[in-house]
Image (cartoon, rainbow, N blue to C red; front, side):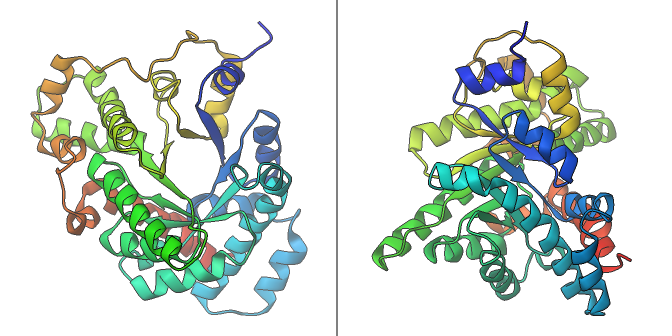
Amino acid sequence: MSETYLSWVIANTKTCWWHDSGEAEELRRGLDRGAVGVTTNPFLSNIAVAKCRQLWSDDIDAVLAQKLPAETKAEALMRIAVTRTAEKLMPQFEGVEGENGWVCAQVNPLRAGDRDCMLMLARRFTKWSPNIAVKLPATYAGLDVLEECVAEGITVTATVSFTVPQVIAIAERHRKGIERARQAGIKPGKCFSVLMIGRLDDYLREVAHDNRAPVSELDIQQSGLAVTKRAYELYQQRGYEARLLVAALRGHYHLTELAGADLVMSIAPPWQDVFVNQDFPREERIDAPIAHDVIDRLRTMPEFVRAYEPDGMAPEEFVTYGPTQRTLSQFSEVGWKLLETFQ
C-alpha cells in the first residue's frame, strides 16, 4: 500500500503532527513526511547543535568566540538551532497565515519559577522569527507568564504538562490573555497546550511498582490515553481556543488511539519511522472510551487521580508533581547545562 499510516492520518482526520527534533537531516525527512511544525526543547537543541556542529560551524564558532556567560551562551546556541529550523518552516507559516509552521523555543528550565526572567526571555525569543512559539512550563509562574504573553500577542506552547488540571489551567489563562489583548486592540497570541503522554505513563509505572498497586502494564499504557481523552472531551465541551499538543510518545497506541482528534501530535523520528513503515487499523479512535474497569484500577493510585480529575491539583501544586520535577531536571541537566558548557 503506497499510502502510509502517517499520511492516512494527515489526509483523513483532523489530527496533524509536528516534528520532534531540530537536527537538520531529521528535519528534512520530517517535513517531507508532512510535519506542520517543530518541537524543540533544551535537550533537543543541544543534540541538534552537537550533530550539526560542522553544518552550522560559522554561527557556532561566532558564539563560542565571544566567551559569553554560561546562561547567555546556552541561549545563543539554542537560538541557532531554533532559527535555522524556523527558516525551514517560514514558507509553510506564510502560506497559511500562521495556522501552521510554528517552531518552539523554550525558556531556561532552571527558571521555571521566575516570572520576570521567563517573561523577559519570551519577549526576546519572539523577536527571533515571526513563527516562534515560546515554550513555557505549566507551573503556576509559567501560567502567569503565559497569560501576559498572549495579552501581548506572543504565541506560546505550554510544556512540562501531563495532567487534566494543567491543560485546563492553560486554556483558561489563554482565554484571559485573549480578552486582555482584544481590550488593548492587540491580536492575541495562539496557545498550544501540551500533554506529555508517555512521561505520565513512565511516572505512574514507577508509582505502581513502588506501591504494589493492583494495575497491570496494559493498564499503565492506558493511563496517559485516559488523561488525554478526558482532556480532549473537556476542551471540546468548553470550546477552548488553545489547541492540545500530545508529546512524548511511548507506543504506537499513543497515536492510533487518538486518531481523528482535532489536535497536534509531536512525533520523534523513530516513531515517524514506525508510522511510515508499519501499518495500523485506519480508523478514528478518539471517541473510543477507556474501559471502566481500567479506570477503576488506575484510580487506586492517588497520583493518577491527581492527573485525571479536572480538580485533581491546584496550580500551586503543578511544580511539585513528580513528572514536572523529573522533566525540568532532564531539560536542565542534559539540555540547558550542556549548552552552557558546549565547546
